[in-house]
Each structure stands twice: as C-alpha cells, then as structure tokens.
Length: 363
Figure (cartoon, rainbow, N blue to C red):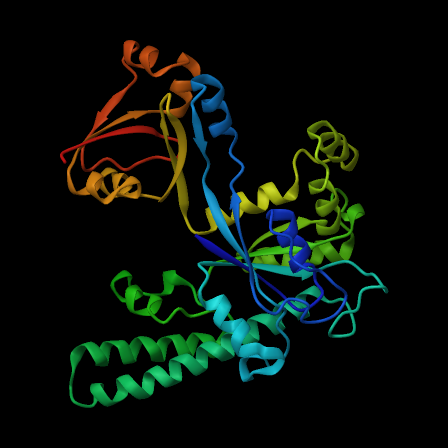
C-alpha cells in the first residue's frame, strides 16, 4: 500500500513525512522545497500485535507497514505544468490513497503561497487541479476508444459510455465515487489511475492549542468536510515532530499528557490510512515469528492465504482460525485448542479483522 502526502506548498507536508518516517525530508519556508518525492516505509501501530508478542515471545516480529510518499506542493495551474505540476501529478498517480494536508493555523513567519490561510479554498485548488488532469486523461482516452466504437465494437462502446459518465460527474464535482459505477466496469476505470477517484484522508494541520479545543474556523472546516463524507483528522504537525524527536518513551508520554492526548496523531493517521483502502489485518503467531498481514476486507480464506504465498492459495485445504479475544483470554494456542475455541474453516470462510490463522495447504 502506498499513500501520497499532497497539499499546497508550505502547509506541513514534509514535516508530517518526517513525523511518520525515519527518512528525514528537507523542510523549509519556501515553495518547492521538495522536488523529488521522498519515500518511507512506516510500521502501522498495532496494540493487538504487541499483546500477541507479549504472550508468544517470538524470535521475530513483523508488523504491517505502509509506504508514505512526500510529494512536492501543487499550485494553481499544476495540471498545465505550473510549478513542475505534471511531474508532481504523475507521482500522485502512482499512489493508492491520498493524505491531503490543509494548513489551519496562522503564522506570519511562514509564507502561504496564496497569501492567506483558508483551508477550504486550498482544498478546492488541489481538487480542481486533480480534476483537470483527469479530464485531460479521459479526453485522450475517448479519442482512442471512439475510433474503435465507431466500428461497432461492443467493449469499446461500453467503455465510451463509462468515460462519458465520468466526465459528466467531474464537470459537476471534484471527486468520483466508486459506488457510482457497476463493479464489472470498475477494473476499466482503475486502469486509468484517475486522481479524482483515489480515497482521501484530510489532515488539518492545526496549532497546538487547537488540538483539544477547536476554534470556530476549525470547527467550520471539519463540519464542511464531514458533510461531504470526507475522512478528516487534526494534527499539530510541528508539535508531532517534537514528540517524535524524543528518544525516551516516558518523555514522549509526559509530552502527550501535557497536551491532553492519548497517543501521537501520527499513529492515528497511519491506522486511518490503512482503513481508507478497506484493508484489515490478520495474524500468524508462532515461536519463530509473530506477524501482521494486510488483506482486503470481505476476502475469503484462500485469497487471504495467497497474501502469505501464492502456493498457499493454489493448494488451500483449510484454515485453522482463532479469534483474537480468545487467544488473549486463554493465553496460548494450546489452551485455545483444549477449550474447543479453534475453528476449522473452508474455502467460503470470510476472514475477519484480527483473526489468527494457520493455513493448511497442498504443495
């Protein structure tokens, strides 16, 4: 999974990236400080994994992870190449989800490319540029498919109709919802890697004081975003960087206690990004290794087995499943078995978030 951090210049994207990753991106008070995208692999905070490790004491631990990409700031006209826009937009195209940073604090020492702080205006600027690029992509695709459709090719005719529907939606809105299209048509839509259809998490970069007590302007931003069904969280990104720089756990906890929050906002952001793509987690737990794995929600056991190795899916026999709560309550796989809580499931079993699974398969 790859998520791209986007936004206007100087809204806190690179600082956020530094909070999330051990890779330290340059951060400065001028537009286009980031030119090439910085990439970091970030472990997903997982308290369930930690508890399994406490019980099993394995030789090795492997958490889930997400690839975070710090993409340079977009500006008006990016879809036409302004501010190296084409390059930046192509970087976004390669991601699965978008983390859209909105600057929601005022600071005269940090310039704003638009001259004033207005997060909802900034949101519209970015979405408009993504939309324009998609319209360009679809228009080119229409020209190509249109020629085949004129020959009576049924597949091309259907694809042309889908493109017309997408254009109609983009001309009225800035975002496309997957739910608006038939499931069988969606593979064609995904093949175009459209920017406007990627799931988005909005991150309101706020002042430290607004973390626990939102001002009226910030409340309006949240209300407006949530009315459109958007996913949104707030973070004091500069403060998060200061927390992240502390090496001692107790010092970090003391800092968080002073702020009145339970955990760093970066932890929540990573989990929200994971959920954004309808992903869930299952576990394998043994003395050699306890590991978290990512799978698509509502997936059946054979395809989930394929996450570990394609041979597991091809030769799938059964899945031995332990519910997470049962594992924690009984304290070991052996005691779960003795209590009759281990379930043997077949090919039609829909894997649940938190399942601990041992797959049986033919080689």
